[in-house]
Image (tube, rainbow, N blue to C red; front, side, top):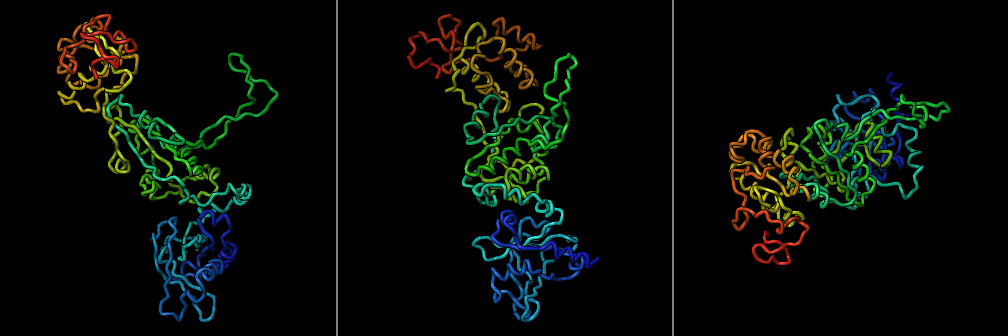
Length: 508
């Protein structure tokens, strides 16, 4: 058995090829498989494949020997060396016999014996401009996952030389991406603001209560495929089917995160943005799953940590980014922006661990300067500019201690809707009645209005429905309902009570 393992180890070793160098970002390296016999030893006999790299790059005289007072060497530890010490370490690595090339290394200093299995791979490599060698350990199954496929080399060879990318780590020419959650009252224009903040390629998704990790990242799904058949198939209603005989195949269907990540890794000289609408309408931590780990960012916007992706996600990314390493991360050119409103019903509470990985920006309510601020709302026998109407409502909500995230934003109703009596009742009043003041209606609506039907009927009959007066900034109760005054937002202003300046109505 031991002899069989030794034969296997002898086969599974060699110098890094161009594929390995691209994968690890190396300029030269060597690897070998460990055997069961070697696991039981305290030191490891460094095979020629790795030994030659050390001698070539460091120099024979600069490597400790059995006669040296100092027998330790410095190594970087490859980040993918799971269950191991991270960062830079020093451990015994020396020529083990006088005037010989045989070398021993105390690899168990990094990876404990109980983590090793027969066939696992050790490797050593160097990177450009760095004299300190990198040491790495990778499980046999994972090594086979990345390098065991016979067509892996062909995949590289089939690419024109100008399309072969270097290791994606640190190659982006665009940096500064970050995670942002924009929050505020409904109708404040959060989606529009994120659109302005975004640049380059934008991928957009909306979260909802049934949204999952597999929707967000991707999963295998049934996909219809067709064969070219001469037979004619028909639907139940006798409609001919012209696409051929249908079959169901299972294919990996990428989600918006996988698509955005792939695009950002391919086009490193462009900024990319993934916009998530209604982030907290789904269980965000569950939807992100292991992607959660990638949200920690360095100063340049790149993920602080990496994760090993699922095989199907890795294969999807690898087909599009041939130089992808063993793990994935969010590059410095991929923003993740999101909107949320914590006052909405049916939302999920986000834990502090998830929230601390985001920048939060509050979207205030700004009523001045919007295109329909002077569109008229019918109320109590008069017409009131939308801006004044909303300001009066929000002021009253503040007086009765309603949180600002339940106040009315300027775009809660779009242009053309405030002047529509039906839209005011079915959209604005129902929101106020059911969601905002349902536990304190008597402090907002007149006490005699016992039902929502009574409320809408009173509003349509031009009766007063609020316990407060809707006033202009100057203090007037409301604008009289005269046909010659602000009959629509697009009609010109007339005198009231004096001639209005050409710049606009006196409500700015």
